[in-house]
Length: 537
Image (cartoon, rainbow, N blue to C red; front, side, top):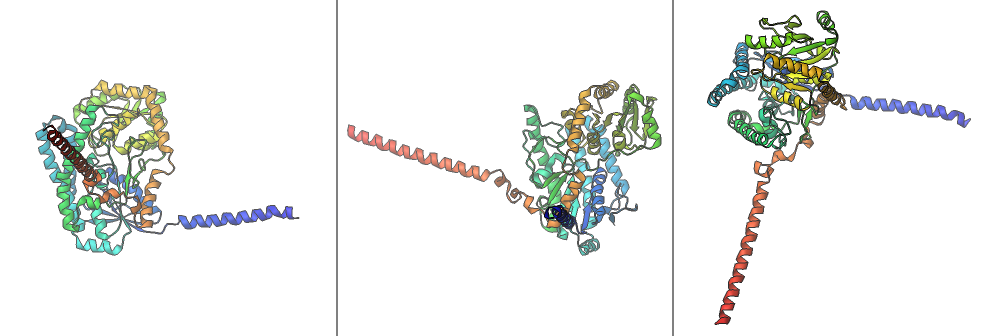
């Protein structure tokens, strides 16, 4: 009888154990609703941060985004789980767009034809204009007493900021709450290195915007070191000089002193993209957080894709920020595309080029992620924006990169060094160059194999990038910070960090040792000589 009862007893016990475990999991996984304030940058920066904020809102948090009245992409009138706190600024959207257009034209067409002096003069004017807009934006919040009073009364638990847009950390400090950064990179990685204390050995960690890989020749290592020094000088003379005064005026602290207090730095890359390098415990990689499985294509586009037959399609997009190019460049591109056996879906809203082939269809907008995930997609021609690069990695599509500005050359060099991309110069490439590059990445199987290898690495993560970003923001809220992940290097002076005081002390000790030894030996020598001389006399 006891034997017959045993299974029933065990089954009953196991049932209660399961119930207990479910209750425990439910208790510990429950996250209380917190208040989150976001300080986003515009353009593609906002597209990434928005996904994180929407996921936080979906989990029950109250999310408010501070949005200036002249922003480009943040439409606060659309229904959303996010709240928008719109504040007025002293410039218009047209001013913002003009500055952006001038910047793009300068980097795409102008910089290649300028002398160093002309480049310096142009950059000086551009930086001054940009700084004025950034200061006006900061003033719109920090010097708006009514808005600051409203924000303080809302008692936020955390600020999620993009450091590309200054003052997010200043707002957090003024409100007395911890803050988390989310961004791709800063010029020369200056913010990460000088404010975040991220180690970056010059010998194998290429500086941002150098377009070097981690395997550098002596000349490249020399150039990398010089560029790091130059970018640090620019950072000190332009960024720090201007913002130290502003931050001191508001809180009596320097910009890097405040930025260094970031609890977590969410970096929008991952080891499928990055070169191996030293990293800190409060730096977390969340690259590809916007990527998702491909959805069905719109009917019109699906017909085009299916009509491509065995040759498949090529997806071509130079991003959302560049609407058109010069007639000469567009015709060079169109002539190359017209000679491909594949159908080409080109995101382009400019004047239709004369050389456009029957196999090439232009669109004002394309569902890029869904096209890259389609089995008929053979290659992706891109300017090298981080979002597009990660969609190509996610779906395992080889790349022809035509970088234009900012981090784009670096991104394409990363992909080239990993064997899934060919890089072309926008201003120098000819029709045959583009045609050969596309045919190579399609017909040489190593490009597809390497793309699929990186795709497998990307998918083989213990936690999805978006979930990881949300986890670390919630982690900071649960623990009121993440000071245990912050290195002690933040408390050291620059000479202590590099142990220059220790090296100096050792040199002094060594000098004293040799000085005392030489003095003693000299004394002994003279003593011996005197004694010998006296004996001889």
